[in-house]
Amino acid sequence: MHIDDISHKFEVYLRNRIGITSQNSLRLYNSRLIIFLEWLSGVDQVSKDTADEFLNLINTSGWKRSNGKTIRCLKNNSINSYIITLQHWCRFVAYYQLPGHPYSKNEFRCRRKNTSPTFTLTAEEEERILAVTVHYKRRTAKHLDHTYKAFTRFLCMTGCRYEEAAGLLWEWVDLDSGAVIFKDTKNGDWRKVFIKDPLISQLRQIKEWSSSTLVFTNSHNRKIHPQDYSKDLKLRCKMVGITKRVHPHLFRHSLATILHKDGKQDIKIIKDVLGHKDIKSTDGYIHTDEEQIERALMTHPSNIDQCSTLQLIEDIKQAMEQLPQLKSSKLCAVIRLDHEALRLEIAISGTTTKDAK
Image 1: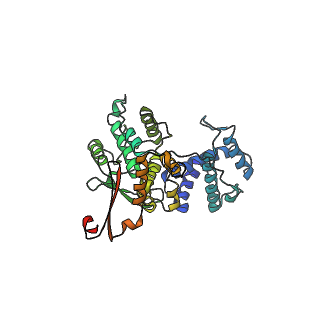
Image 2: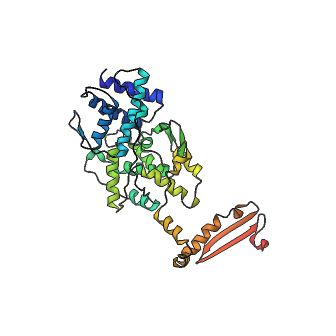
Image 3: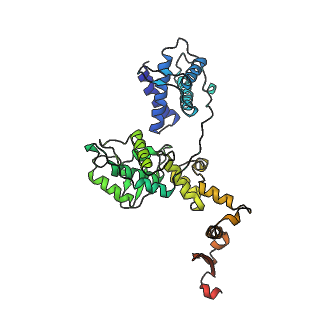
């Protein structure tokens, strides 16, 4: 069977038997399989050792493909994508009873991930990125700056995955109500989010000149390529002096962190916004920023006197706002921070503050 035929059959198998619906995942596994099958075509005997040799090769000195490109020195995260592909491949071989592949999916174990700390963007940093204007030399790029700005704001405001935004259709967007439905999602479940101005106004402008069924398109009226957008995003960050490692998926982490910071939103709500099935996944998207770490350390008794008066008052105010007693329906509590003074007024529901005194 030709590699292209196997590749097509493998994709159908992943979609129908394994239940993988994400186009990104299907494309990734398919590309990994094609590379592995190219390697197998030059191997006399197929075995578990053969597969291990392939994995070690792309992890070290490298292997040159038929198209001239060399795959080498891949990190564990990339190696794992090949290992997961091999695990699916073993199931595929067993399901169709293909000869010549005498190894089990259980023989392949993912390697330890290379993890690095995630530094999310603050709301102020996101606004700085959105304020940047990029001038393109190409005539066809007349509306590209506006589109990229709207696309970035959409990622910031909805916390959606890149592919969910890039593949969004106009028929799934109601600009009058601000409702957006994501139908082509990673886990296959539909979900609804809501957007406000200025994003709605930006989308209305795009709709005036766009002839595509896609909401966001490039200068050729086609789907925005992730590498093109990432390159443009890095340029905008450089222009405003943001040195963090910024990528499209970071906006998803940033939204979760901003919503959860200081207890603004319950993690269950954030889980629904992000479209996670497991709340443990959502927990991995919420990060503490440097300000939170500093403030936590300042609560140590030996550090309290080092805090400014305003900081102490603000911390007390936040602590009072979290008191469950003040949220009782029997009370009407008002906390005010005026002229460097913190005031707490508590009234019994149905009476004025003056009457309660």
